[in-house]
Image 1: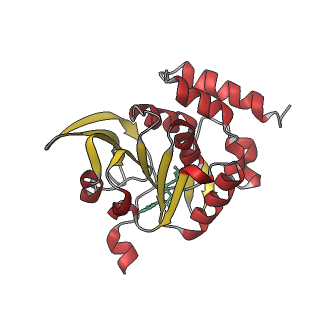
Image 2: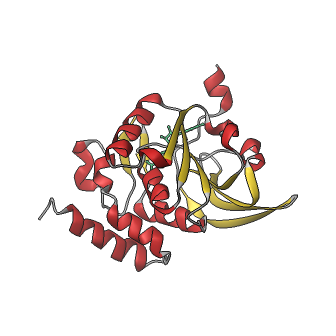
Length: 216
Ligand code: SAH
């Protein structure tokens, strides 16, 4: 029973997502389908469906299921949207995005994590939908801009300007801002030359590596 991952996944969707405020059926279906434990080192498999973040190595974490669902739902995705993710990490959030849209660009600054995420995502059949890049996400991924949605899964003290520049008109950026305390998850919507900024909820993410840290 302990290893019945499918049952645990169904319970996760029911109790942690549906019973809270996750209503987007595509998000719920994606999270019921994707074997979340496979994105973790094997010693953490039994924690994969807990209502909490889980370590993935190098001091990083896979976000809590509810947070993954909430952020994805907040982007209000359409199948044809082009999405940029900053902070590939385990690759789990990338898989959730790839279940919903056709093209996901994902940027990770730590090569080891990026390589592991790429391996499992390819094994699960997502290779054609995902473009991987190892670099500092502070600069976004200019070559493929503009994006209909940008999702950042590490907290920065300020919103990197490149990410705003790379949003399409009407595009949405979901990003945790503030470090180390009082982080807030924001949704920024580009409306012509103006930005609509909404505070969604309080949150705790690992810090985003700054551009200075990588350059030095
Ligand atoms: N979505 C991931 C979250 C991983 S934690 C998951 O659920 O597994 C955040 C990730 O952001 C880490 O892997 C970290 O290495 C990465 N990261 C931190 N700063 C970054 C930066 N400047 N550019 C790209 N990735 C960054």
